Length: 167
Image (cartoon, rainbow, N blue to C red; front, side, top):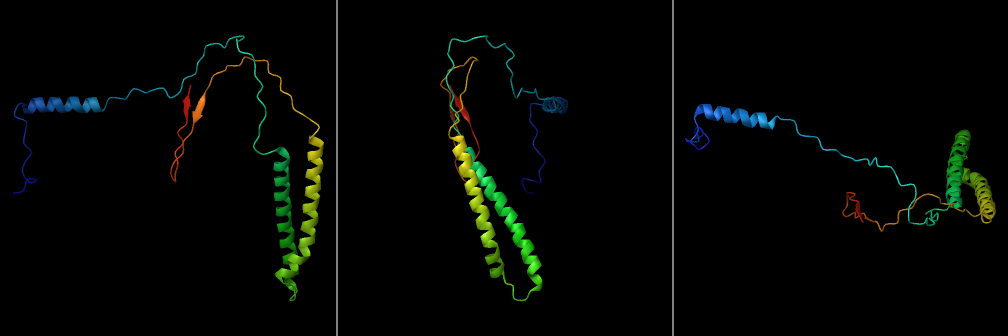
C-alpha cells in the first residue's frame, strides 16, 4: 500500500463534531462578500475665488505645425485620388494589347506631378498668410504653481505604462 492509498490521518485533538463545526466556519468565512474599495475619489470642496499666485503664460508648443499637417493630409488625398485614377485608366486600357503597366505609369506621372506642385504652392501660400498672425493668450483664472514631475518608464518589448506623479 502506497502513501496515497492510506486514509488521511485525523488531528488527534478534534472530534468529528468539532471538525464539522470548524469546516462550516471556514466555508462560511470564505463565502463572505469582500468589502468593495473605491477606485476613484472626487474632491467636492469648492475652489477658491482667487489665489496668491499670479497667472503665468503657457505658450502653445505643438509638435507638428499646422501647415505641415495640412500638407500631409493634402498629400495623402492626392495620392489616394491618383491611385483611383490610375486604376480607372488601367481598367480602361485592359482591352489594348500594347498597353503595359509601364506605359500607364508614364501617362499618369505628369498628372501626379502637376497635383503635387499645386499642393506645394497651396501650402506655401498658406504658410505665408500665417506668418503675420500671432496668437495671444489672456489668462484670468487662479493658477497653482507646484513642481510636479511625471515619470513614465517603459521597459521591455511589451511595455506596461506606470505613470508616477511626484510632488
